[in-house]
Length: 49
Image: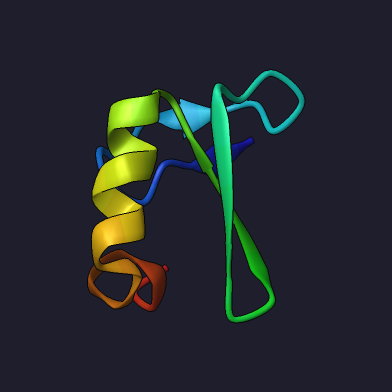
């Protein structure tokens, strides 16, 4: 399980609705909306976890 960096929801990587790669790291999302929010500004979400 991975935490969606936008909303904090726990997401099963195998069943995740969406995924993004940033600086060699995979991020999993509960929805396309969270992925879109992340993709607009990955540094806001990608470095705190």
